[in-house]
Length: 305
Image 1 (cartoon, helix red, strand yellow):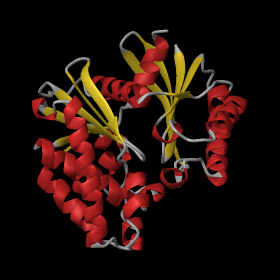
Image 2: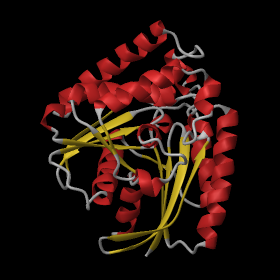
Image 3: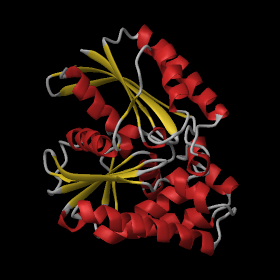
Image 4: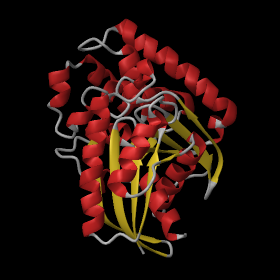
């Protein structure tokens, strides 16, 4: 069955078209567009008109792709930024008009479970000690989900690369005081997560989404962003400490010149790196990067009906 999964988060909107048969998922195309839908949401509680325009333009492009590829089933999942905004109705209507489906504003728990499935099944060839902790660092939130073949506990907390950047990181490069304020926010959120998810029980850790994959690509000195190469690569805490310190000391222009840096991630990578570093400090585990994530979990679920 040919299916399409769309994940609309705080920073980016992404599309996966895949053929799914049994446990096999064959990617047809995977696209990502940085639309910064959640721009200003932490402050205003509403989507900005310009952010909606950027998102709807991406939806128009994805609608053409889905039509051209003969997709049979489609699901549109909207995550962190879409949960609490005052003008959600305008967002829903705009997506429905362009794609013919309503965006489902999924809960943090469902987002975590879908990310877990996508990440763990996508790394089935790897030898990962269990229980495995999957950490999904998004633009507005971070999901923690622990399990073996299926999740046993999960939580979503409101720390993400966009939210932390907009709230605290205003200097170029950010000041020590700004960095400290992020660290305080992140530590409080990890304390909250640990009350629901026993982080100390994890024996391995997978990281999904652009913060993790970009930092791992930098750690390994890749000259270009190559998902096939990045998938399954690991990084130690020492590696992440070093890259985080370097990124936070760089002005914007220097970050933009990094070969593996997506232009839409330049402004927020420091905030994401601080979240990743804090999680690794807390767990004491290395991180394994996964290029399969919530999109893959959505696609597998669609094929199962």
